[in-house]
Length: 156
Image 1: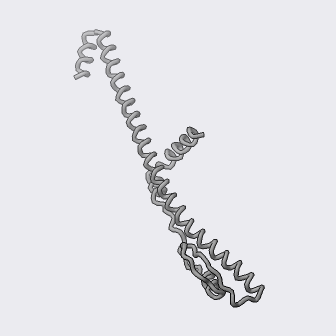
Image 2: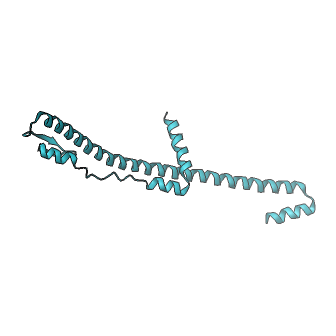
Image 3: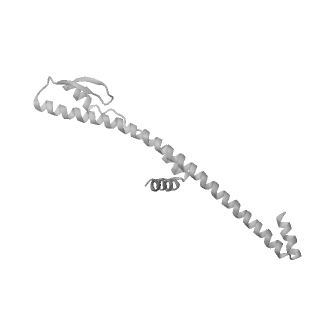
């Protein structure tokens, strides 16, 4: 329809109408592209915030698992140090209360300390990488790093 009006104006050599029609078309295209850019930016912000939220949840999960292993390791080191002192003193009748890494209070002797301190049967923490892999696969890594950088700058 607009092309027909422009063609009619060209045949009549009505340059004012041709210029007005072309300006209308150009402004319409520009506005359409601008609205599309705004929408894309809005979607990118929403997606970036979603990724940040998921990464935060994954990190909280990972920290919890590493904390469990840390407490177990600290308990084992404490028992090994205690056993070393007991063995140096030759006190085979040693017994004392002990709180395990899970918070259970027990009374432990030399052989219990040996058994508990050498039991390395804990599982390695299951580090969550699903969000990170999703970001890699979607190509959103750069966008997310830019958003994280901007958030850090804003808080600084």
